[in-house]
Image 1 (cartoon, one colour):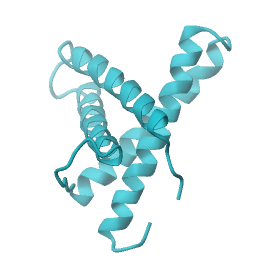
Image 2: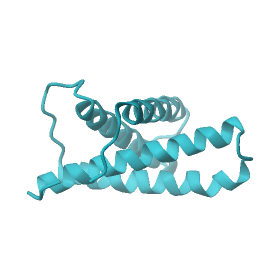
Image 3: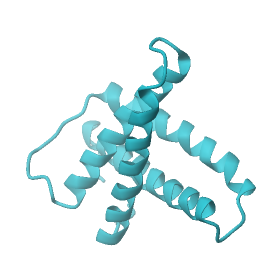
Length: 129
């Protein structure tokens, strides 16, 4: 089990929060019922779920939050999909550019989110972490 530092969790929350804000803005421009709308909505749900798990991991959230197995599975799928998209564009950015740095930070944040979701799934299955 990987242990994340407070800094890593904070940076992940910042990157995912930023991605969520951008997705919320995009959502306003999309036509309801389209594939892009559904994809963005699933992403928003995944980002919100991940931010709750990060807050709990940071011990910022005292309340116990539980998630349905379906929402956890959908979040894993959403992060896998969005990570693949970011990985596919990463080679287009020169190392050291703001775009490259942003993409790398997002990938790390999504990796942390996926791990926290996997842990949540494992705990629901009754497995030890």
